[in-house]
Length: 155
Ligand code: FES
Image (cartoon, rainbow, N blue to C red):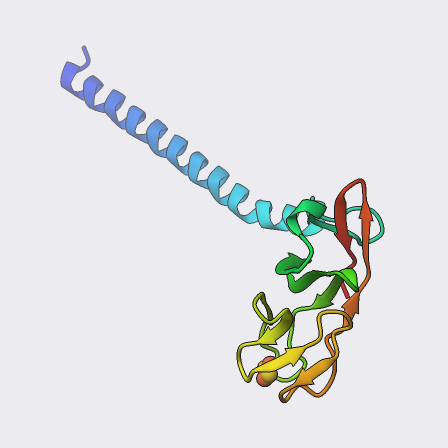
């Protein structure tokens, strides 16, 4: 006749062994998912939801860019300043200053594009340098309006 204590201990060992196998399998599964997820993400990158058509990016509705205003928006991860003037209408420029690369901003009171780093000033109608150290105008970017949505093509 078998010793009941020994039978109990053997069953406990089996249960522990089963539990450890289950834990090891689960760890292997988690590791495999952790390794494969970035690989799959690299091989099949998600489509950029903000990009529309031939490289155009919607930046907002026309109501968001009233006349006499300027606003910096991201386009493909780069800053772009959209200005709306009486004379020039809606226009998009790279918002990266041509001097040392600071991000420009809209000067509402004086109605021009200002670089806060070294007081570089740019014309809102054509992006030309008004004053300060910037050596060249702000590059203009293609902008179109379709059905009240403003689209900008990144540089
Ligand atoms: S970085 Fe813009 S004026 Fe110097």
